[in-house]
Image (cartoon, rainbow, N blue to C red; front, side, top):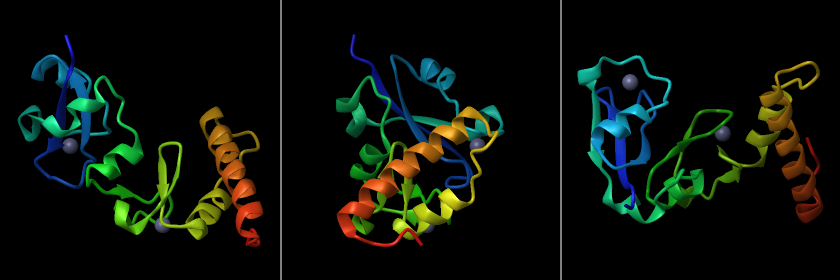
Length: 140
Ligand SMILES: [Zn+2]
Ligand SMILES: [Zn+2]
């Protein structure tokens, strides 16, 4: 059976990130909620999200959320970004523009850091490296 899309939100909508998961039932969807959220059970809303059904079984990428009209918060300055603002998407991180990618990269020191930080730095470096040759911009 095709899994259905469910949108999970908090009553304090917007503060805790909302997400879409794919499951057969609302209860299954609840178990898939891995957001960083400390809300009470009754404050979490789970509703069907039919417009995401075609993306089953997921996971939904940042690009797909943007395509559905959702916003994503910049990985550096935390500004909400919609698809119309044409943000930079690197794996599942979204940035306003190149400056925010550069600033974000500078805020991390991969030496001795956790594996996830090291791989993030590599991804940012790869993107910055390839876009330098495309745009002939300086890295600063
Ligand atoms: Zn919450
Ligand atoms: Zn930004």
